[in-house]
Image (cartoon, rainbow, N blue to C red; front, side):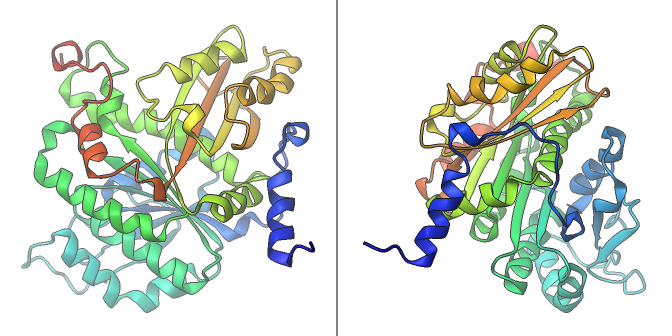
Amino acid sequence: MEMDSNEKEKNVITNAYEDNSIKYSNETIENPSNFRILGVGNSGNKLIEMLPGNGIDRSFLVNVCVDCLPWGCAWAKSRERISICEADKPRTGIPHPPESIRWLVIEAEENVRRALSSYKTILMVAGLGGSIGTGASPEIARIFKEIDKNNRVISFVSLPFKDEGKYKQDKAIKAFEKLKIYSDLIIIAPNMRVLGLYRKMPVDLWFKVSDSVFLVSLTALYYSILGKDFPGFLKSLTLRYGSGISMATYGDSNVNVEEAFNNALGSPLSGIELMDAVGLIATLFYSNSIDENEIKNAPRIIRERLNRSSLLTFKAIKNEMVDAPIRIVLIPIVPVKENIFDRERMEMEMNGRLFNFSWENSIE
């Protein structure tokens, strides 16, 4: 029976990720100018402004600002910015819950459309639970998808610490549910899992340490998105399963890739079993001291632990700024439609109930 053109395309994309065709490559997509990293809200802007310190070109960064609020554009330093409302029209006399921010974005929709119209892929970084990131990021995702349904939205969102309270948790869950509608891929970054990495941590360092941990995942995402395989990987993933949800983990080693891989899987950051994943974004960072065969064998080591039907995109990057000679970042993906990350799961993540976490052992 003859397959229609859509089915043929699906098979071609899928077959590109069979074991025998995974290749180590540092090539990039033909037109990276179609891609931008958006910082939304104070948490999002603070995080993306740390990326140039990891070797990422500042020209990819865009600050989304609410200039009419006195605190609406903290941390913004990039040359590109999207202004939701102007500084000469201050809104200091009204409360600014996420719903108010949402309406500010709707009022500025034409400006947002113009600013995003030349891009095909955005990596949107926001903190959920506060005001600007919570209210603006779902609307920005919606607008970008409405410009062109083939546009790719990748959302990277942090979740509140337990101590920030149930009110912020509820706001985070509501925004997350909206983002699921318009994102091709959502990477969740639960702050509580970061506490599980350390025996003791002073409270005043919580956010600083979380930012440094999340920066590892964002840096890996940047390089993966610009890889030549990524557009086909994401298209194949969404054709098969619809949009996806992920949590990132990473592991270091002074010895070999396999040890780094096992350390990533055993980390408190690891919230998705590889055998449950329908896709995996894997990024290997290495220094001069690593043997070339370690790099070439890395996809095989990874593939052996994946479900045979899972999609895999792999990229190896030489980066002397990484803390260890070998670091592997894993971003396993499950389908949104399986509802693994429902309200109960999200609440458990934000309260630190899904891994071996102890307040007594974590707070100094």
